[in-house]
Image (spheres, rainbow over the protein chains, first blue to last red):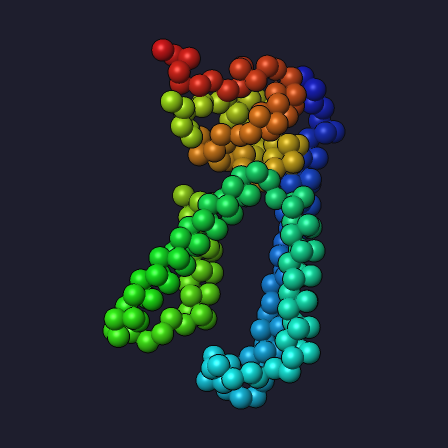
Length: 147
Length: 73
C-alpha cells in the first residue's frame, strides 16, 4: 500500500469528484432552465418570429427591465457558484473558447459590414451574430476538451 | 523555450502504483477527471499551486513528479 493511503480512504476522491461534478451540473442546469423559460416567454409573445426579430418593441418596458435584472442576477449568482466547481483546466478552456468566439464575432461583423456597405448583402443581423458567437464558443469548448 | 507539453510527468505511473482512477486522483486534488487526463497526456501543464498539491499528495518533491525537456540538454 502506498504511503499515506489506507484501504478505507480509497474512493473518497471519486466521491468528491462526483459531488463536484453534480454540483456543477446542477448550477448549469438551473441557468439553462432560466434561459429556456425566459426565451420561451419572450418567444411566445404571440406576434410571430418576424415581430420577435423585427425592430418594433414586443415587450412592455417593465417586463424588458425585469428580464435584464433577472438575467444579470442569474449570471452573477451562477458565476459565483460555478467559480468553486471549475478547475483550472476548465477555466483555461473557457478563456480560450471565449477568445475564439469573440474573434469569430468581430471578423464576421467586420466582413458583413463591408459587404453590406458595398450593397452586396442585407444589414448585419444581431441575432445571427449572437447565435454564431454561441456556436463558436461551445464548439471551441468541445474542441479544447476533447482534442 | 518551454512550450505547453514540454514538461513530462510521472503522474500516470504514480497513480497506477496507488491503484487510483483518474477520478479518484482528481477528487483528492479538487480537480476534474478531465483535468487529470489532460495533465497525464501532456495537453496541459498544471499551475504551480496544483503541482504543489500533487507533490504533497504523493509525498515527494515536485521534480520527482515533473521533468522539463531542457533538463536533458
